[in-house]
Amino acid sequence: MTPDQETGLRRFKDVLQKADLFELKFGEESYPWLSEICFHFSEMGGISREQTTGIVAVLSPMIMWRTNLEAAKLLIQSKGEICRGPGFRKNYEKALKILNENDLSVISGPKVLPFYKVLLDHACQEIVVDTHMLAAFNGVRSYTVDARRWEGSQIKQVADLVRIISEEKGWLLSRTQATIWITWKRITKGRGDQLSLWGSDGNKKLPNMWKGILSQIEKGKGQEEFRQIDMLHKTVL
Image 1 (spheres, rainbow, N blue to C red):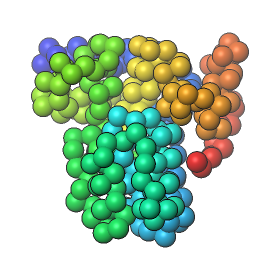
Image 2 (image 1 turned 30 degrees about the vertical axis):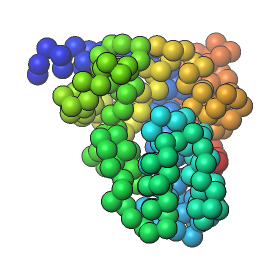
Image 3 (image 1 turned 135 degrees about the vertical axis):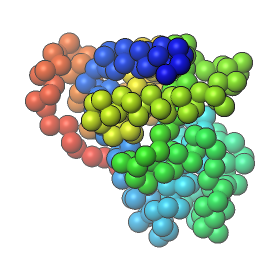
Image 4 (image 1 turned 45 degrees about the vertical axis):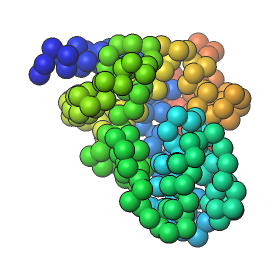
């Protein structure tokens, strides 16, 4: 292991030690929840789960979860007639190819393709490495344009460290990655940045399965008390 990897491993472990129950539950349940929504979109639109998952994946870069899911839902519901949102135009073109031509070859890229595969099967061996994971690895608040040099050399390093930690903990790879990801957002930018995943009113739109835990944390309840709370309620956008 290189010195950079040793440092990155220590940083990831430090992040996980700071994770509260909200973040631990998010790490465990976020990918299954997103997969469930993709399945719901499939039933709603009468297309395959691979197509709906691909649409969500290709629309995901640089936008919040809620916006991502709402844009995908609108596109699928309208049979491609309504194609709008803050995503890049090329991403919408890819989404339309998936919807209209079942062309899954447009799902590509170092973040988007693993994201697609993990949404299809959260127990798979793929690891999503995005700008937040790279920032956590490097111990910086956010990923900058100057830091794009990280991508080529560090994506594999980050993935290797997630594998090491997952093996130590007996966790799925997706769970480890998601827990580091959401915890780093709070550590560097605060709880508000976490909730912004669900939009400007994220505190109101937070899925029920996490809302109760967050409410208890904000009231200063003890972590062990949360562990007795059944938070398996599921909601679909």
